[in-house]
Amino acid sequence: MKVTAKFFASIREITKKSEETLDVMDGTTVEKLLKILAERYGREFRDYVFEDKAETPRDHLQFLLDGKSVTIFEGVKTKLYDGCRLAIVPPVGGG
Image 1 (tube, one colour):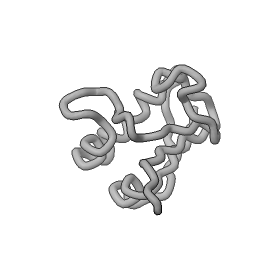
Image 2: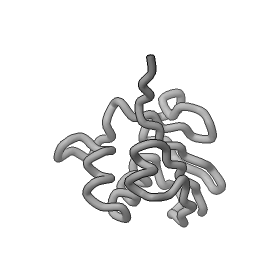
Image 3: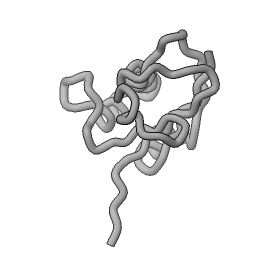
Image 4: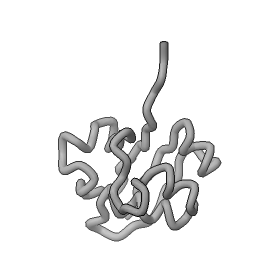
């Protein structure tokens, strides 16, 4: 199935892309997609997205599945589906 990952701010700088469409297996979760992306984009991506030496995404990042936070579903265990768009959104500062 095809899913699109959308990148913003620091993640966009790391990947040098605003989005990417990937072919993944049915049943792929948000967490698995993040690991696939970490393999593709290397240590800088992994260090930004995952806790030190852990395989869990950092709490300060938001993941939006077709514009809705994955926290209203099953968090990073949420299964993706064909044609969906996952946005990886870093914290936003302002003032």
